[in-house]
Image (cartoon, rainbow, N blue to C red; front, side):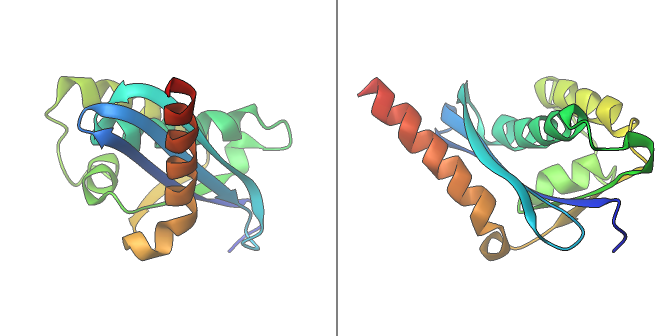
Length: 145
């Protein structure tokens, strides 16, 4: 992998569908060193909205990094949501109007980078991003208790 490649693990989830939702993002460099790892509660949302929100948040995070040369940066997203990966790769159509809004925002952000690709991975390989989702949900639900 070239040194202008960023590997991003994303996950989204909700407790209830819809329910309290959060996203998890783990950003690594071409050497697989973790650059950022975080989770964020996003309020009440469906699982699918949480998944797409994770992609969008990751892109926004990378765009905010001053050290990133956008036009030369390639992003490889690894996620365990087959639906999101297939839709963002253009293999499946997006029929839900709410999800189509997220996809449009993601596609607009993609255009700022050299290349963005999406790859489905098994849930077992996405434990770091999943852990960030659960930490964010636990913190949010603890605040509400």
